Image 1 (tube, rainbow, N blue to C red):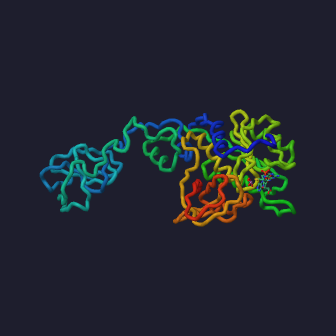
Image 2 (image 1 turned 90 degrees about the vertical axis):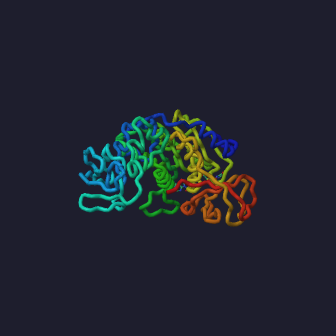
Image 3 (image 1 turned 135 degrees about the vertical axis):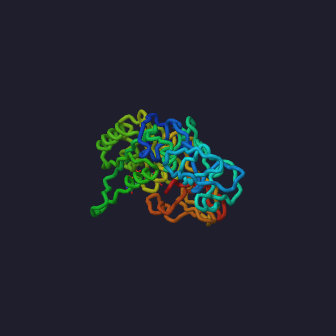
Length: 399
Ligand SMILES: Nc1nc2c(c(=O)[nH]1)N[C@H]1C(S)=C(S)[C@@H](COP(=O)(O)OP(=O)(O)OC[C@H]3O[C@@H](n4cnc5c(N)ncnc54)[C@H](O)[C@@H]3O)O[C@H]1N2
Ligand code: MOO
């Protein structure tokens, strides 16, 4: 990492992150019930027809339509019954939702639409062949694709795959992610602060945000502002993780050891410093297949950089084609004076009539991020934005 590297543009930095990241190559088989938020690596093919038999969709009566309007009820079939009685003309069975419809019946009438007298059932509505019968395989046929490779597995997918008897799926392994927080001033919450200390929050925040995105394999490692310790810690973290997010120590101060340490252990710098606010001192490097981000220590800057650069890398790893966060153009709700020349990401809240840029834009303040559901992107050299002007609004992937 060179102190005087030229700042690169946001677009160039984003392109480099994608260039140096790839779809996760490790595929693991796992129990379906644990597969939430994993990305399917191999298509799932259904081994059964669903439904596996002609299924009653209503509680009522099943019969074969004839010219008669009154039928004799000869049997009862409920869900789970293994029964397929042969119905003669004029005969019906009492049937319940989910039960197998006899092969010899071609209609189910709901019980609200019949009159019953003893064993006689009289239909009180026009009949249509196959009414209220879910055809065998109508949801999915045996041999058809149930879920395509590349799908991020949601709760509904798990339900559908369970319905066709799938118990295991092959998914891309999730990367293991180290969050290395640097700084002598950092103290774990729970103990009183000495003068000059602050509570560590970047590690906790990034781990929570990763968890929100479905990445649970994270470890938070703390290191003091000490060159040798920083080197050893980073080396160890890189050896056993796929992605290393370092926060703090990436700027130019005498005690900012991250860049020097990364260089000394052989991390290849892909870029350092981006023409943006916040997050100017952002570092991205590679060591073998491991991606290393040096995020700024300022919490809001670290989180901005996470969404703009780390998120796309994670999406690429999942095999997604759209790796950036979704963005839309929206009018801003009041005039905004832009400070500085760098392109900016401003914490913002989408409201009914547009997007509001929030108070508290300092990269040291994490609080306003909590109120934000979007980041407004302001291109470089924009002095002022007038109320109603449409601005690029990046939607945050928050729950
Ligand atoms: N002479 C210059 N000074 C600075 C520049 C510059 O260009 N020239 N850039 C500024 C900008 S912009 C940023 S951003 C910061 C980034 O610095 P570092 O990444 O080296 O971060 P630190 O100095 O270690 O910390 C910055 C700030 O954040 C607090 N911090 C750090 N880690 C955590 C944590 N885990 N949890 C909570 N808070 C944390 C730290 O105490 C500092 O207050 O550099 C500027 N300086
Ligand atoms: O670029 Mo720094 O991230 O503004 O505070």
